[in-house]
Every structure is written in C-alpha cells, then in structure tokens.
Length: 353
Image (cartoon, rainbow, N blue to C red; front, side):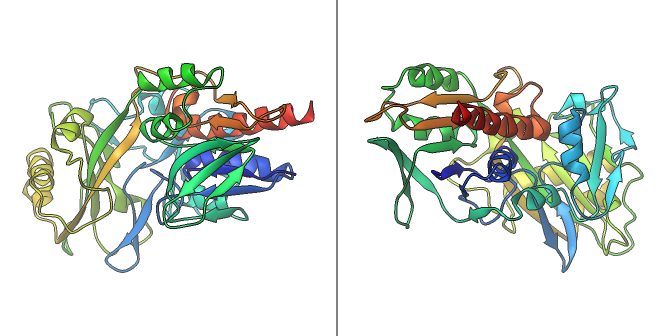
C-alpha cells in the first residue's frame, strides 16, 4: 500500500501518523527540528533537571484525547497546576473551564510526543523546502537530501509554513486556491520565552503558574521546578505576551536555544523582578528561546482538517491533507491531536470506499 508522508512531527502530525500506522498504513514523518513534539518541548538544564519551555501543562476534556494521555508512561501530575496566582489571561483560557482536566508529567510534557512517536519512522533534521505534483504523486524537496514522492502528503505545520509549501503547487486543484486563501487569513502568534535557574537557597514562589494582571510584558510565569522530584534548583519559565513578543522578535534568528544577553531577555528578567521580587531578576543562569509560531491566533480557526485531491494522470490523483490546532475548535494541544486523528480517519475512510 502507498506510503503516507507527514511533514511535521508536532502533536497533530504524530497523531495522524500513529492512527494511520495503527491501521496498517506505511507512514514516514519528516521533521525539520532535532526532535519531535513542537511546542510540547522539554530539555535538560544544569545536568539532568528537566524543564518545559513551551507548553507548561496539558489539558482537555475529549475522552479520546484523555485516553491518549493516560497511555503515556511515567509519573503524571493530575490537576497541575492547582495553585494559580493572578487573574490575567492564560494562553489557553479553556484550560481552567469547568470539566477541563489538567495534568503535567514529572519527566516533562515531551513525554507525550515521545510516546506518540514510538514505533514510527521519523526523520529529524529533514526540512521540506518545496512540493510539486508529478503524475499521480506529490514530490517533496528536502534540504540536503534526496527528494521523495508520495500519493498522500499531510502538512502538520504552522499556518505560515503550510502556506509557503502550498504556494509551490500553483493552486490548480479544486479547493487548493480556496485553502490557500483561507490560510492567508490565518496567523500564528510568537512568544519570547526565558528559562531562568536560580542559586541554591532560592526557594521560589508558592504558586505553580501565575498570569499577571498588570504586565504588558509577561503573560505567563511557570514555576517549573514545582513539577520535579527533588529538583536541584529553582527554575522559572517566563513567557511574554504575543504583542510584546512580536515587537521584539528578530525575524532573522531561528528559535534554537542560546545563552542570551539580548535586550528582550533582560527585559523579561526585570519584569519578573518587579512582579515577584528582586530574587527573580538575579538567576544563576538563563536561556532564551524564540517561539516564532507559538500558537494559532484564536480569532481565526477552522472546524475540521482539510483533505484535498490534486490533479493527476488518473483517478484518484494525489492527496494533500492539512492538520494542526487551527483545524479543530478550541486551539491548543488537544485540538492539534484531534485534528491529526480525524484527518487520518478521513484518509482511511476514503481508502475503504
């Protein structure tokens, strides 16, 4: 049976690939980064201490999604965060709605995408630079590697990245021009993020997360070390408002970690000190990260994933699927997972007909 190529190893791409593979389909996942998970990102600092620097916790209410989280091995922290400070607006306000279930993982939120990726054929450091139809297939150009072809390609990317790749197809297929126009009206919001580790003896705050009410700089503060067992250091994660992030984002710099003395990093520390006290402005070390596509703008979303049929030499021609948090109501990780799973089911249902 023809292989499906999934571009993007975030939650939506991994969910689609996992559902297709479970149904017996051959699937290849291509990811431009060095690891899977997208914003469900965890890294180690100061030796072995884990820190979540994108999504701070997971939440949802859909039974299928909650069942998928329950399958993740390792210690979970149901209900985290339970100690909230401030009445500012969370990135995902639905996280605290009645009936919503929240949890974190002791090993970090990246435990979820690692679980989804287990057993899949995933190629990291594989940046897809272009798409083109050829006969009954879609050709994928890959930076520094041989091109690939597939009859079915799924784009599970930020809206801007998907839009750029679709543009190379020329908009000839019914629905492709419409999809391109829809994506043009959508946008992702950035988030400048700072991980700060503090000297021994700094106890950190009593809260799990804080959403400041009177800051135009900081939208969310996560006491990340409160999720860890016997943490070596107090570690805080500071995330800036989308508007402030956009004003200070350098479009020429990619989002990889760096020891940073950038003005915006110092500004986040100064604001943390104003909000939490002088200790917050004096970390023993800090790392900055630029999330260029942190999340989809909630003012624009679509209700379902898209499956397009492109012109080919025969019938049916090649197929192009679009998935991501944009393509399911609510936004966030749950929406990303639901969109990928639903797109996989659309493909399987069509193949059975």
